[in-house]
Image 1 (tube, protein in one colour):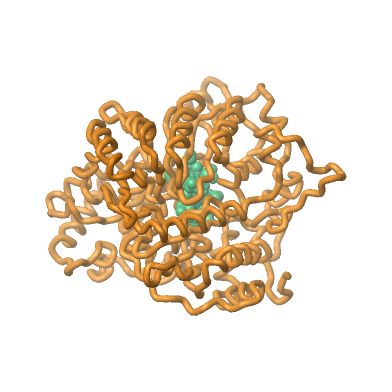
Image 2 (spheres, rainbow, N blue to C red; image 1 turned 45 degrees about the vertical axis):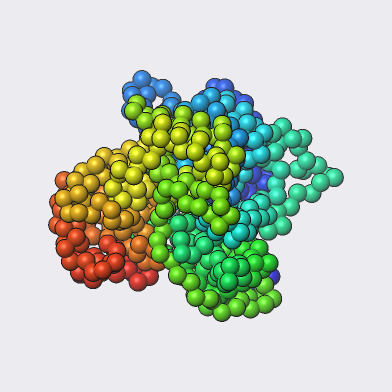
Length: 572
Ligand code: SRM
Ligand code: SF4
């Protein structure tokens, strides 16, 4: 199937390629090292493999210096990410995650920007029990991280119930059918008997092959007018096309991604581009064949240039489209018209076409915890105990209490009021449009704070917003602790990327509907300068904006920043 004319970059394969190759389909020595009680950590090679099982070894960075002084090994602990296609969890599953976080994690749950749960702070000896607990609740952590297809996202709010349930089914199917076939996960964590290497059973990965993909791969399905999943940030995005109330198919967009490295212009965020249209029953084929193109032509030598976006930019959009059509054996249809309004969530109760109700709640930084004056985790637990619908985790780190009958709505609402959950209404629209990645203390790559700092920064920006009558103006604001872009910072109308403790690069000019990237406005600035800049720009927006003009469009029209027209000119 490999096209002799197209080429993957030459170069010595990266060390991760060797680790995968020698791993016997993602097993390595994980089973043995997890039993070792001498260290709370695991060797680097096994940690690389661990990701494919949905987990990373981390250490508590707040304790790093102190432990070093005491000549102790770092405070090792694991992060565990659930695979939850479309972000849909039943009440029972919510309760299990709540309990596991208490029992084995740091007591909190992180709702991620890819619609799933993360737990932090799990000790090595508790990993197996945690994964088994998740498995018993009919969830898993397979392929939640690693060089494979990740959790498949889909539009969150099911108010157009029939369309959403169809789209959700597609997200589930893609997520399940694109899973690695290795039984490594079942053997290591679920005590399934080993089959690999025995003469009776020859293990194969029909789609991935023994080296899996050169890098992670992400798929999301949007339902216009909401671009809540940021479809253009996906390696492969699908845009649902609805005509006369029927889902007739999907526009196909390829080659998006947010990550980059400070100071390296060969790395950049990029938006996926629409290349055509497919019918619902062609969706899986398109996904599978696109993945195999990245498998065959992605860069296996330089990991920071290994994402599909670089493969597409290197080979050319048309070439990749042709290759896809060759592999499919049929041509994509012409892309259909669509329109996005926004990439955030819409808060509060909405009634679906089937008369069920859905309540979107703002969860700051996606962190579900009991705070001194705000018992959020307890509140959601109490709701889960009586809620017969489901919880929908959104790509903006929020939660939707979905499919509530009119009879149940009263009961749920009284809990919402008792625990002051919609106090978010009193927040500014700016805060409700915020996302922050985890960053410190758990993320090993963080250069600055994000989740723990953005709320405090917003406290101060809110004063400026209030002074200028912008309280109800939705301006998306996103912060990450490093340029990897886990909070999709380049798609925030105001974006911050951590550079060093207390220092950020500031970005402006992204489109409110997720269709244009931002551009760097100021480099390496601290809080005082950030506020000074916003004290200049926000009043201008308040006074000079045109009817309905979004902040991201205004800063370009007002020539405060140049528009980024493609990822390849992001750094210009
Ligand atoms: Fe991410 C790595 C957290 C969504 C781009 N991401 C990490 C790691 C695992 C750090 C590491 O490699 O050691 C972070 C763990 C921190 C912690 O302590 O939990 C991490 N990423 C997250 C989450 C939890 C952020 C959040 O606060 O919600 C999100 C989990 C999503 C999920 O459920 O699967 C998360 N990461 C994203 C997104 C957004 C998205 O997918 O929509 C992106 C940008 C989109 C993209 O992939 O291009 C993203 N994460 C990265 C990258 C950069 C990849 C690249 O192309 O260069 C890394 C670093 C890497 O892969 O080497 C990374
Ligand atoms: Fe960590 Fe950077 Fe991702 Fe934030 S953006 S979670 S700091 S890798």
